Picture 1: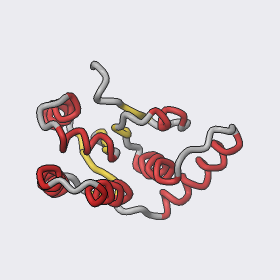
Picture 2 (picture 1 turned 30 degrees about the vertical axis):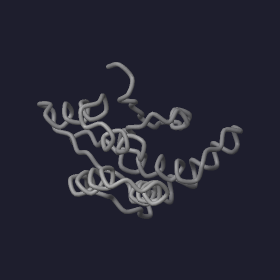
Picture 3 (picture 1 turned 90 degrees about the vertical axis):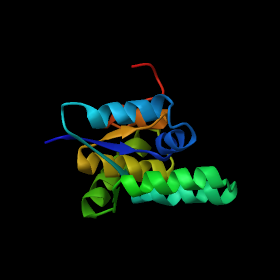
Length: 139
């Protein structure tokens, strides 16, 4: 089964702002690698990005968003996500390390898919069993 990479809002935002930057470069490298992989995002990310664009309208970024989202499958939430969410929220709250609602749902979504979350948000590192890659850091 190919690796699945779930891109968080900040990863997609980096690609939108700098198509030749570190995140965009790693994105292309993964897509062109001999080992197959699948790049996806969550419906939650599709909710977050237009919100950011609405707060600070920018025609260039809007065009970049439109192009990127046509290329990237957007996956819906399902009952597997709900099950992962319940267990994950329980563990994080019990351990005194809760996280934001959207981040928690994105983490649960990635866990349900067995996906790697691509983000530069360090909160995801606290999630037990979640694979996280920060493509802004040196490889």
